[in-house]
Length: 257
Image (cartoon, rainbow, N blue to C red; front, side):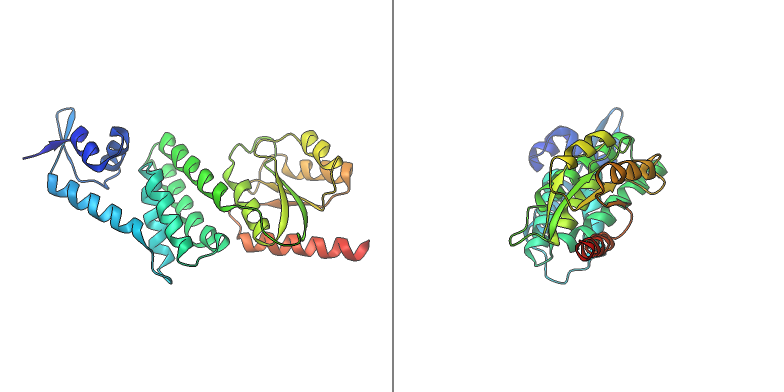
């Protein structure tokens, strides 16, 4: 006997819309009959068992490509609970937040973006996935212990409306013991200048995609007004590269004082 999608959602203990996204993205098998979906109870049970089993543990040394693929599926489905549990399990298996972002989260985000660009998922689904990632990375980007290497400001320049690139930059810098002020996305240059002028800051990082309109001009304006070095960080670049560039500027600044 088949069950409808509402019954399946109750069995899976999720909202109807979550179950609908799983069906629409092919994660949960279903057959459309008229305007409704019918599901085999065995498929629902198998999906539920597998979903909860995946959340339990992740073995140390697990293939990051497979983990990224699983995370991208959770993101596409809008399943924040599953995405958070997977990330937590990978972290608990001994993967540092920086490595987790580099090898699992960033590839999953790229996969979601590719699916959105190809039309496989809607722009709204892409925004939901990005928002989930922003919340997850925000939790991972906790301040470090110990003496800070320096103080940095991270901001997305005006026109850069996504928070995720900046949050990834915050996480990378904090993993290298920087004290970080996160100003968010779409920040006017004057706001950055005002903030930096009132504080002892060693570095400004502008998180924006390569070719972002006006980013070079914003960098020049901030450096001219504050004399604080400014790095442009492309979210497609490795986070380790940002750490190396920031450390290099800090070392150079210390030597010239």
